[in-house]
Length: 619
Image (cartoon, rainbow, N blue to C red; front, side):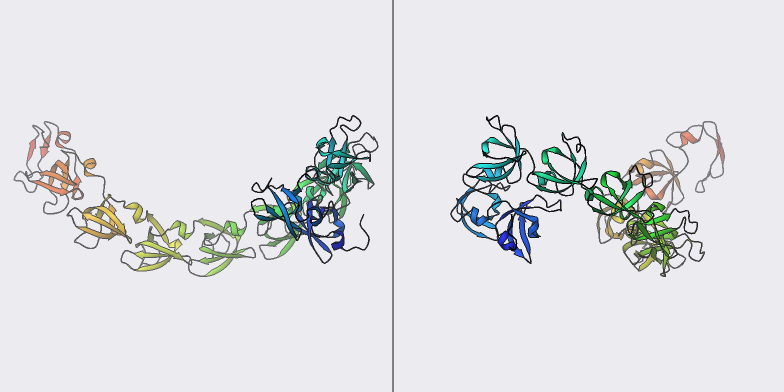
């Protein structure tokens, strides 16, 4: 009982142990300690440390206050999930805001909720807290095996109210906990089925409306109320509010053919019935056991900014596409591509894919696909999205807003397609820069910064660039053979080996021993090694130098130079890039007895005709 007229401070002094009796299933049945009072509400610290403020009528005292239970000087044992504290003993030194100050045996001081303390010698309260159910295990056959609800503890004996209503006091060692308290096993608003020998109520389902004296209050589906012992109930599943949350969709499964199969949106729950707004706008209240979840809510199926196509018998809007702008009263708000707004039932919509922001992310490039010939085929960079239209900055610098369904993604962003230090070629109608090659420096506002081979810098739209290959660092690895291609005649054509890289320049050691730093765009990889390209006996033609145009045969290969014996007998060594393979060697080209003509402007035999009599050593 609670005296009428007392305020919350008098009914629940700070430190009082309480149990929450609430229609909120997350709080109902939870234990806690009173920590204070404010504006008629009682502050409670729950067992897990959460703090809540509740009206006093939602609380029930289950024990003495911390001040009464644990007086200063009382020896206590800590019962806590904290392994560093659990099992330790100490002495009560004071009380503050519902917590008990304890000085441990080593002198450390801690403040703990009273439910984490046990006065030495009093363990029964913790083993069998108030309102839990227990089974008697006793040699007394009259009570052995009976089940009851804990109603208190005194002098080491636990008070139990048996299911027949009688009360007994049992030593704690003659009890066995049977499970959760009634409030925990059957929280308010959950549904339970009656399992009873009474055929009139057996099998009926109801909604839990409270718990008192070991009996669970149920409101049956026909609206009547009964009180049933907890051991005659079986949970049937989630509460209506959990099984059918607000805004979810549910289908009616009923013997009433007028509503059976209809789908509606959940708008609330009251007295065991779920409120539905049907697709025709009407409202009905249906018992939860006559409903079946119908799928995602409108907000989940058609999230904000996604695009949806209308599938309707109304030919004026059927097939139109719009952007989702909200959901209200079971209808999805769409902004159509022409800018108009409509509200459509979700079953008349079909998701068309990603939202504009997902399909065309910032800085990506898109091509316009439009019946407007002035803009059709143009490419631009995405700069934003608003009201179902995607903002583009075209390659000429102008800006336009285009419906998402009139765009086609063209590929990577500039940073992905043209990473810093990669090389690109300009493809432009501007003849001054068209065809020029440069190295990418960065990207800004849809334009790619390029340092051309002459050292000048330009900013070019990404659509006017073509990747030419790997970056310098990737293409010219240390040890690679390279040929210099430069306007500087002193080094052009020279062959060397890559020795390092720094600040966009490639360090090359030439065959002469000179080391130079050359931009990557002024180098090309050396052709396959001469050993693989030429073999001894091959016929070759000299391409450069004083022996240009002369013919000879390969006599050896060393250090990248080709040894050649010219037709006049001169022996020379030339770089491999100055040699071109000629026809097959003599043994392969000229059969014995074949008629031949001498073709050699430097020979006295030039123009003379003869017959092959032998072929040896390429002569």
